[in-house]
Length: 480
Image (cartoon, rainbow, N blue to C red):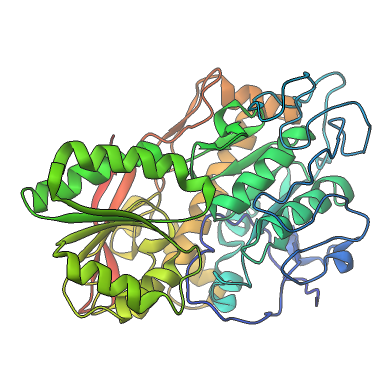
């Protein structure tokens, strides 16, 4: 893997599970972005081996599997093997019967933990799929990353500190995601970790991060996983947008308002992290549509050769709308095989990106997806600093990927600022748990509090304009 340094400082968010499968390894993976343009060292980056398993030599427990966890691996909450009986998925030290969901974790305690923080910098880690079945355009990433960080750093940073970000490619694979997060936490010693996209990858890393006491922030994905318990119970995990389950009744309302009395369908990716969402969404649609719910089925996580069969199932059912929660690449492949007109509707974030409209139109016409960030038609009125900052850095007009990254950089900066000048992992989580509302003008307001770690309050609703081959912002701040 080739290491590059860029003259930017940044945070990346849920912008990564976006385009068609089959992309090969891209340059620029495994990068450290620093303030002021200096080249920042990346000890250990060369150990992240590309591949489906994503094994870091010496990082135990990264064998292939649904969640990237080796049964019986033990961590003591400090990132070292301890043999103490602590569950590596959650940090649970209690003795429970096999198969019992574990819901506790390792909370930073004892001495104040300022890992990743110096007097002048804050080092943050991020994992996202740059390669694999859900790769995203490298040029869009390179242009977008660091726009807000450069903007805020030019104004003095966060309580006098500049942002640095260490990036890892997780290849859309939960094992590689966990290996990458283990490297970020143990070897690179970052302050916190940001999860890009993909339910399985976020689940795997969130549970690992909790076991070693590292704050972990991601978009809202699923709420629970079989035998592993709810993500909300992980002490260090924070979701900054509505979960899929929270979006389910909103999706039903959108579909019912336009297709009440007509046949509709539901298709959800088959990975087990979406089992609970599938049940919730199916129940919501069944209540609203009764016998007009033509089908409720699971589809492969990575759809390629199966696309014509899935498309035929949809068209033969007579459904006028399909609630879709699967990968953008799968959505594009299915729409390309369609012989009928169907409205796709679903939860956010990545199916509402313009690159999906470009690949899926005209069959994707009028598709509606929720998103935590608005589209290009609304961002300038919602945050007038965005476009000028992007043009200053890149000399060109921004795309929607840049909006997503700008929004999460701004949100995380607000969180770190709220934690005070004496920044630590404890002060950050105390600020989040205090019930303070974070409003960055891009994402709907975020508010945690006490044991509530799902902090989203609303979503923006996007609609595909196939004439322009892009999404438009239909409604902002839609509430459950």
